Length: 327
Image (cartoon, rainbow, N blue to C red):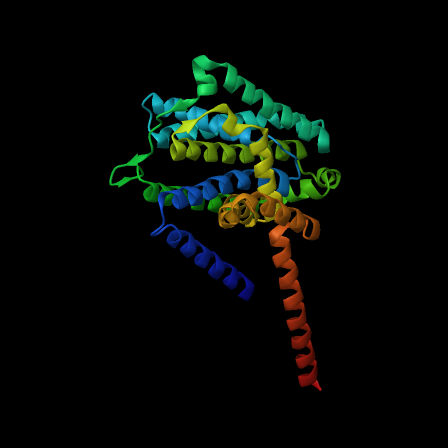
């Protein structure tokens, strides 16, 4: 019970820090913080597919692209962002459902190659179908959401709008992973054969993991559209899928708060290290490599190890004192 109270207290403190972080900062810092929230949403989706359900995907950036382009085309046609975005999420959900079918046949690195090929396919379609996507020139001029009394045209209001969307997405993900679906996802990851023998429909759960994770990628893409107000195919290449995968791994795959920590490291740490001038990318890469070598379970895993070490000692002391009182 106490651990749960401390967890929610920590969440409240982190949320307060997120609210206060952009105050008094320049537009570029606000942009970087907004990018962290956007990629945290994309990483949440991949974390559900990979971390909870155990299905490897290297196509998360392609779903960001689908969400971004559907939202951009609809908003440029005069649709409101709040109407265009649910349609973009539905498109990503359906496409993710279809992409999940290869996962029913292939596993491991074979599935990684399939999703990698899909990401490349989406990139080529976006680049070559100029009549629809603008090709290499991309699309620009997408409006930011106008909520009447609350306008998001300036960087700071848009940051708070993105923060609100991130909180809603996180609460939805919390409900999913704590629901019977979440337990089914973890059972699929640990032992698919045993899960199926216990009556779990592994086929449906696999497809659902891909579909929900893809929808989260689409939501991140819809926010990117309004954030930069310009999109082009190179922004959603394979390299960005690998970047999102790095966020999940660094933060801790299969943990709820892992995507937030991982995206913070991948997005914010290079900016913190810019005082080293030309060496900041080298230092950043070395730090990530060292962490993955000595803590392959991610930052959440390091915290869990420290917590276990601390609480195990406290438990031993409590047991000893209890035993002494019984004498």
